[in-house]
Amino acid sequence: MLYNNAKELLRKYLLGQVTADDEKKVDEWYDAVDDSADLYSPGNKQSEKIKEEIYQKIKARLEEKGLNPVTIGSKPAISFKRNNWLAAAVLTAAICSTAFFLFRKNHPLKKDIQESPLAKAKNDVKPPSGNKAILKLADGRLIQLDSSGVGTLAVQGSMQVTKLADGRITYNGEAGEKIVYNTLSVPRGSTPVKLVLGDGSEVWVNVASSITYPTAFAGRERKVEITGEAYFEITKNKEMPFVVKRMNDDAQVQVLGTHFNVNAYDDEASMKVTLLEGAIDVSKSGIHNVLKPGQQAMIENQMIKLINDVDLEEVMAWKNGRFYFEGADIKTIMRQIEKWYNIRVTYQSEIKYSFVAKISRDENASEILQILELTDMVHFKIEGDQITVTK
Image (cartoon, rainbow, N blue to C red):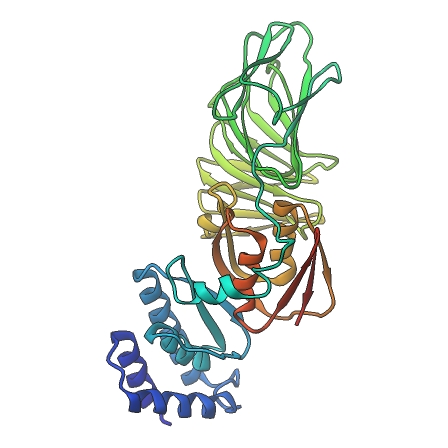
């Protein structure tokens, strides 16, 4: 089938003007294209142009309809077409080498998810139900935040530590003669915790993360150390820069007052610092880079790589209660799921595909996994606190 005929059929799908004959033509065309080596050849410039054009059209129309696509890279394996949008996605798949699968609460596929064996598993894993963070005081005492009441948690010198009704931990008072440190740790299987430091700076601490900080800042700088991931909104103080250091590393971020996210999990390939507002200086082994809003610094080994126009929605998804995967491989996805649900993941197969999805973190593990299973490219089995991944 010629390219212009294919594009015309796609236009009809996008406008909802399909007929039974159109449906048959699309199926025939799809089957033919799937075996076409020429269309997938890297040197076919016409093919690449059409791929990009159709991909952008589909993406825009999906967004207009409020549909959330789950996509996988490589040639598609499509076993269902429920409506015109899925049919249009099928056509896109043949041209873009990408399969789109749609999901929302009232989508027809919801029934498939609810009735799947994975969703019916008796040992399904629920999302975290609350804050399980632990606050370690300067004298070594540990406070379990999920069991502590609202109000004053401790008094350290002239500083008062308070838990507010919304779960925030705040520090109020004056700096004493001796600087003392606290550590807030958020384990796997907990919800994130918001911390208000002694200078008014706010920090959101992600799951499987910790932050060590002085109860009150004094001296020439305000320094904290983190593991894992945290988002910062720093109170401006030109006389006392704010420094975020990665635990057991010389990588650090220096700011005067700004908004930024630091992802420094040990199980990730690189440390990522993303700027949302203001300016920050990111350094490693004496190398410095100043970031502008929308930029991200990737720190790996002794190198710092700057990335422009980062998808800030994807970076901040964890803080906003969502999983957001934009071309992520299955292991990247499962590392987030491991931390959030406090489970273990094992792999019986190598999954070479990439996925794109926006999914609420309030769902049970089975529902999220079943959405990914709809691609027909990956399968999951839940056994207690372990998830097994296979082709």
